[in-house]
Image: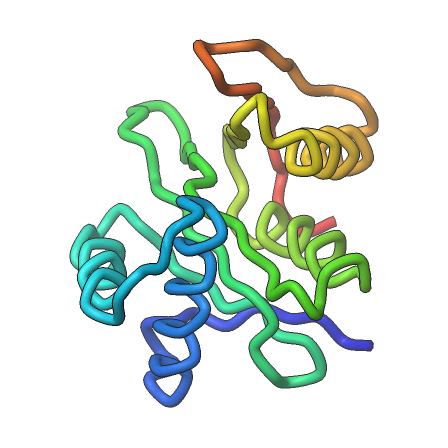
Length: 158
């Protein structure tokens, strides 16, 4: 299995897949059926904000998920906040997310912040393990409202 990243702005042929996957993610997250118009509007907001980067998570050359993160306005260094990270249900627990996350951190060096809803126990567990492994335990974790937040520094490709 080969996992790679593709900038979604430069992959218009995957736009329909991204719209379907985003609608699936919204449905899963909100626990209600999401219309195609809602999904299209959400994607337009992502792509309309120049601070956002939308990456496709590719498994063996085919889309398996997506990630959205934004550049934070810190003057002294590059800083990023993970906004969304989604792996298609049939691709979960197959190593796609575990392989893709470090690729993102390596490709975009700087201060990172990853947030999960505290009630989303699988997500909290996943990100704790990913960040702990990626940083060799050198990260900070805090609880901000209903979110668990991990902060760490990526030095880029190793």
